[in-house]
Structure formats: structure tokens, C-alpha cells
Length: 256
Image (tube, rainbow, N blue to C red; front, side, top):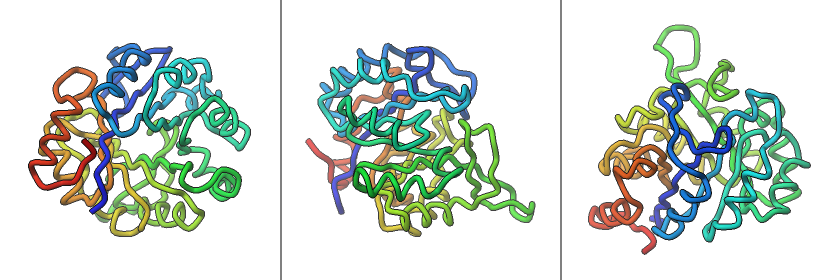
């Protein structure tokens, strides 16, 4: 087994790190620069920065916010939210971002994934997939892709879309369950496992971490290659060293 990555996520709105439940009811959590510096010091493996209002507001990523965080980040740094085209990606890579994450724009134009991979390399392109779970027999996919910060259903099957993203060259998938997001009741293991078994690229599990056991379950039962969390890290319920120690004691390889 490859070493499992522990990834804090900075959901940024109006220049502040915020956190909600199921993508709504946002509350203030931290200053993004202070949070990024702290996570780097604690030993996080990577950092994800998401400009969560960009697509809904019909604008690009706020480069000035990203720059401030990039200046203190000493670990691989991925940015998403409001990335619409190759030009937006280049602007982020030019200021030192290591990876970009595309979501709604990729659903609207899947060929954007291929173009990005050809220009920047697949290892730098993350396809973020937000999903929800539908009732069986309701005429919709059991696991359905949603876009625009979860506001818009697509009718697309998550597993099929993940396979397509891999075919187009994406280096990894950031998979977030809207239903589980912010609930602290655990990752959606059905969704995570379904995608992880369908593709060969790494899956980052996101949405629902509340206890140390949830991180372990995402890896062992959900077959994720990395675990991303926000609330538990931002509000001091779990620290990065604590998470790594726990996983290591459970036999999961992590960086030290």
C-alpha cells in the first residue's frame, strides 16, 4: 500500500476559511494564511484551497487569496473553484500552485481535462467530483454527480464520470459526498469504494470526517488513497500528528 496522505481543506469565501454542513450554513473557521502555515508545520502531506463561491458567482478564482496562502505553503498545494479554462490554470501554476482541481467546468466540457493534461501533465490535474445519493428505483443514478457547489443535479452517474475523467488523463479524483459533508458522521464509504474500485488513479475521500476511525474506514473500507478533512482540523478536534499516529498504529502507512 502506498503511503496514505492526510490533507486539510481550506474552503474559502470572502477571504476567510469557512465550513458548513452539506455545503450550506457556513460558519467562520480561520484565516487561510494562518491555517495553511499551521497545517504545514503540523506535517500535513498536502493542502487543498477551494474558492467555494467562485463558480456560483460566475467568476474566476481570487488569485490574490491564493497568492497569500502560496507564500506560506511548504507542502504540495492544490487549488480549485472558478477554474474555467486553460488560461485560469496557467495563472495559478504561474504563481506556484502544484495542482489544480476542476469540477463544474470539467462536467460542462470534459475535453478540458484532456487539454489540461496535454499542457500541464496529468499529475497536476485533479478532477473534483461532488456527489449525492439517490433512492433506489427513483429513476436517477444511485450515485449522482452534482455541480455548482452542489446546487445543480446533472443526472450523471458518478462511477461512469470518474472512469471518463481517468480516460481523459486526470491524475487523481477528489471525491466529496454532499450528503456527508460537515456531518462528522463518516465518509460515504459506498460512494468512495465504488469509485476507487472503478478506476486505477488515486481517490481522495472527502466529506464527513468526525472521528479518527472515519479516516481508517475511508482507507480500509472505502479504499481511498488519501483522506481530506476540514471541520475536525479547523476546530482542533483532531490534529494532523494525531491522525497520522492513529493510522500508523492501525497498520496504515503514512509519512512521518
